[in-house]
Image (cartoon, rainbow, N blue to C red; front, top):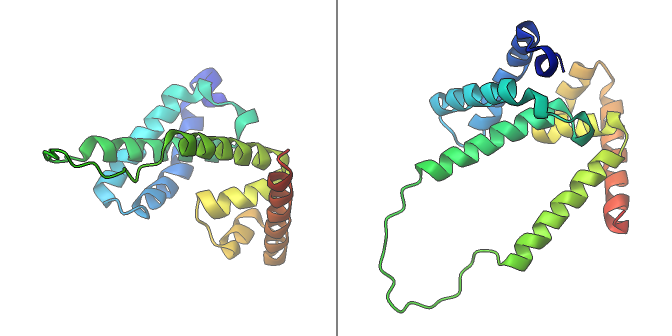
Length: 172
């Protein structure tokens, strides 16, 4: 919030120091070279600086927002760098394996439902899921980072799964 409201460079430096190594690790786990990962981290952090005012805490955590920016930049870079040769297909008429409009719509609706379900679970459970799945952190590291027992991490994760399952099955 300090970056968004006051363009606070010290707050941004703290964000950078916290997120840059995690983003690089996250991007490199997606089969990206270290050099490209560094470039994407720089782009992501510039986007965080310039778009800080667009962050809405009600829509998710800062971590989720920052990782989403990095993920989208990586996808954009891959799309931009792909050079597909053109091949004349003639009368070739085999059905496409690409998802059709209804399937894409269904996926988008599911994504929205999952996002709403995540917002409906308690913060301490959501935080553990984000650390586990977005930051790809093992449970023992989550316990250490949050200064809570490993058993508590496991319990909160199990409770979060139960809450999510119940919410998603009922469609609330």
